[in-house]
Image (cartoon, rainbow, N blue to C red; front, side):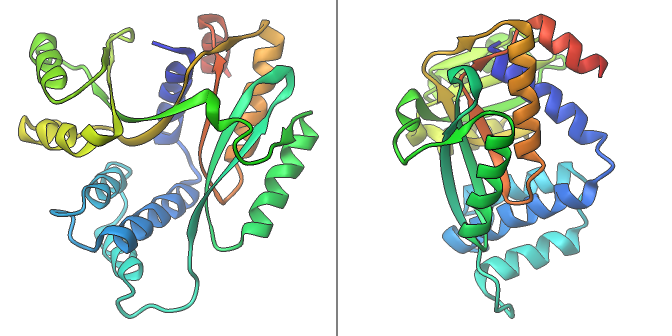
Length: 252
């Protein structure tokens, strides 16, 4: 598994124990709202909404919160604040590329907060297109391996358009596919009773950058600081994180 995937796995485990659940719910609500606004409020016909709702349920969000978010997204009985998706590009120290996805009701606030954090840690905000060329957007699915038949899952994934199936972590199965196969893959996993812990479109680095341990840790702290910002939904980097770094973070 790539360093990025290992780091993402740790963050998922930490999120499950996160006492600041209100902040987790806020991000999930925004995701549901945007999905409903773009594709309608029916999860049976809106794949993105169905996945957002599944993610919210996995985080134990109350049903009434989910229903309220869907209605707000479709505009049913709600007016006022409008959220939008925006992606910022930048560099951390040592040339590490960053893609920072936000959901915000105020672009000026978001960019100011992101720039402040990057500057504080020795990074900088880039122009549009300055970083994006180092990444490709792919459909991504991850779910526990448990006692699943790995050969069957591999065959199902490949037949549904997957480019890569990873099982480097014995606890986690990861599937990567081209964007156009997102719905097909999602439908096939649902057909065999698999609800992914994570499913969506992800920015995958075309080439990862490996640094010295102290440098790697510094970048990881920068990413954590960015993730603390309310408007930030996802952060992608081309940083390779070694097993040594993973062990340090797990013990923290």
